[in-house]
Image (cartoon, rainbow, N blue to C red; front, top):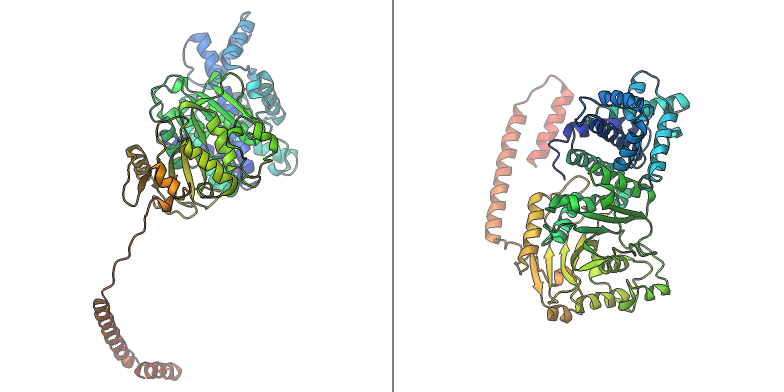
Length: 532
């Protein structure tokens, strides 16, 4: 989980916005309204702050002051030049009456007009391809918001007022990004199974990212790729561990349009400049991307849908991503198709980390052939078994497979982290201590009894290229031997204590009296039962 120390006030305001919608729709729907309107506020506030900075080379005291300064500037002859300059920097222009500050004032004065907010969304979407169709998941006219125009408008008005309490003027991108990340995590918790589409638990993200960035932390212009990016959280983790975060280039693809929109918003809210964002809405397996100038990356991070179906059409045997393996991942399980796609896009000196179900470690047929080829080529560097029930959308245990493109050895490090968790009501969690323990084992790359095993290629060959972790790491705990004589002595002692307690209780019962004959009769019956 991100450091939330400076984000708590912001989170409480944003989360209270969720309360307005919670009774009207489920989390998977209201997250789009909340996160979308928060994002529009971010765009509007950033715009006003930038305008003020261009005019006065200073930060405004308030967003209202910035809005007034903007209005005045528009009356000047240089207004066209100002708009051109702000468009070049922000990629969009917002008219004064379409700013969030204006809408919030109108909402407080009971004069809010949702048609104007819809117009504001449309203007942003049409201003630059970066924002195309970004707000399509927000239906300001949905019957779920209330019965009739007035109630629907009132719901949006209440949400606009509530979110206006969030102080984005004095919140830097880390604070805002952390708050947004926290909200996405909360929505994932409330949404349950559907959360797999957009969220990877932070503990898993942290392990994947730290492994993939290791040895590349100081690289300026680091490139990171996630072909199943969800909300972009996994991609954005690279920013936390790289020494030159402002130069990272992000590449991501996502099939679900609403989730792709979420990722685009997430990028901006984390302060990623448009030039460093390369995101696409599309099917990763059906059409290879990227296929232009930049096609391989320093880091590949993936948490694809587990054992998903795909076409596995014969034409893919000529696809460069899969052609050298001679077989395709089966139609019913695309796990290796995702893995090979990611490996294809990895730089020769880069690192890839992918989360998959354990079946990929031992299933045979086509998957067995692909696995053997990867092992003979030295591509599989490490296998890490994670605890069960970490994810919101599945309770199955998963594993991280770490891959390298070209290296001298063919040994594989196995780590069993299946017991490194704290049990929770719904999900298990890995603490910082658990995460550091896994990373320590990974970095040491040696055999540690019951925790890790560095297997030679010969070890793996003897196991017929089966990578099932228990074949290599024996974490069996022998139960303590029972001393039967001691157990018998304990039982006799317990029997004696029960007998003594029963005798004392019987004595107390015999001392009881009552004028009610029924009670005395029941009491004598109980005493008789105990004396048998």
